[in-house]
Length: 122
Image (cartoon, rainbow, N blue to C red; front, side, top):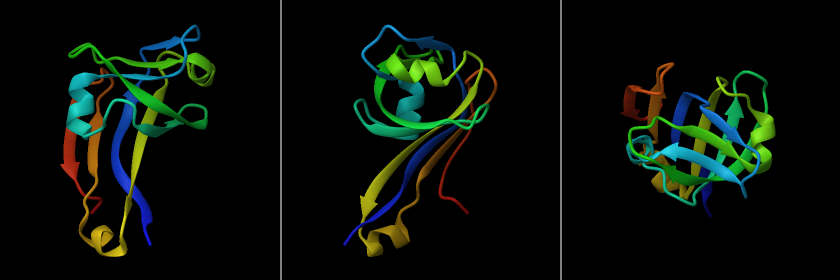
């Protein structure tokens, strides 16, 4: 048996672009991806703090240092540039693994700089 648990989260990223004419996904600055321990191609949930939308997509890497968060394809209709979003990744763990696992949390400021980064929810 496994349990779906929070793996990592990028909290309050500011949307920098929305590109309707793309196949799909979210583009995230590679430096921030690395800090959050997220991977290219990984499935994530996106929560739009401004309008309550919640949807799933996958990650593509953006250029390091650009602080880019671009929703591509149909997902571009669910955000506006300037919206605050939360990007959530999950993992499957056994109950024993879940007792010890600490998710990675990355909190951004209004300019998509890393304000805080830590492991665990407590």
